[in-house]
Structure formats: C-alpha cells, structure tokens
Length: 199
Image (cartoon, rainbow, N blue to C red; front, side, top):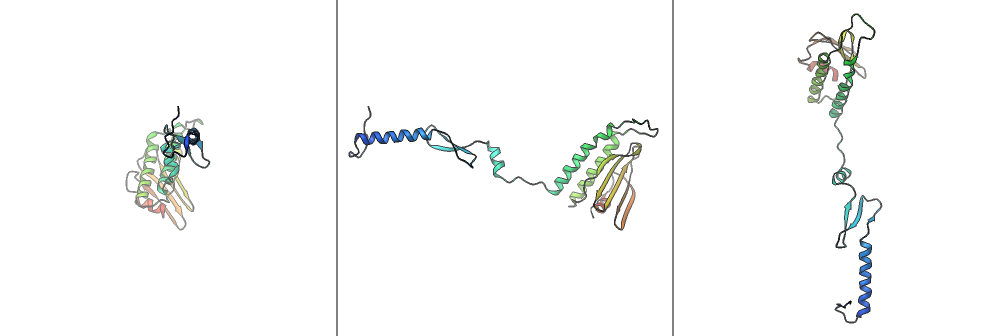
C-alpha cells in the first residue's frame, strides 16, 4: 500500500499519487531512445533513468570526423606519384619478342631496378634540397632491352636511358636557351642534374 512520505501534510494522499504518476511517466519517457536531427548522438538512458549521450560511431570515427585531416605535402604527393609510376613500370618485364626482332634483348629486373633506384635517389636528393618541382618521369621500354626515364615539364624535357648491359646511363635534356647531355653513373653524384631539372 502506498504511504505518503511528504513533509507537507497539506498535500495529502491524492497529491502524492499524482506526483508518483508523473514521476513514473517521466521515467517511462526517459527510457526511450531519442534521435536528435543534426547530431551523431542518440540519447540513451542508463538504468538510473538519467540520460547520457552515446555516439553511434566509434571513438576513432568520431575523432576523424571532429578533426581536420592532414593534407599531404607537395613532396609527399610527388613521392607517392613516383611510387605509383614505379609500380606501373612492372609491365616492362613482361614484354616478349612477339615480332621476332633479330636485335631484341629481353628486359631484365636488373636494368629496371637501376633505372628506378636512380629515380628514387634523384627524388630524395631533390626533396632534401627543398626542390619539389622536379616532377615524375614516365618509365618506359626502349630499344635493345634498355629502360628510359622521360621528363616533360612545361618547356623542359629530359631523357635518361639505362642500357641493358652497361653500368653508365646516357642523358639528354633541353629547355629554352639551354641543353645538356652526357653520361652518368647511376650510383654517382647527381646534384648537377637535379638542379638543372628543377631550375
């Protein structure tokens, strides 16, 4: 049987019953989940009846949503583009002598690696000198099993050819009022070539 525990005797039994009914109604309503538009949260009740915010997303997702994603730097973008080009150049190793050419030389992993390792060295050297406009060359097959690195940046072009059976590469570059050519050891100094390409 319900007993009145009010401190105010003027409220009486009926007043207490009304108050209890209202409290029960509030607790019933507070036990339901409520979704507020425009918010990633649902209002979900604890057993005590007090509402607290519980995110629908995980904490990791919430942190990603609430923070500004870091934009890659120009050097990071250039490096990623270079890695993609190197990966795409793997097709060179699958080229076969379908036309029965007499002077055909198979493309080897060693020749391709000399070209791509040189490209990585050149990019590292350029980025360490804060030169991020060297661009990414196209890596392609050339005659007699050799591999080309070819840059075309605005009015500048540079071609570096890595022969199949030589340790030295050949290069030729051209830009307005300036040309350069010669032979270069892929494992040797490359500062002059980097400056010419980035200037």
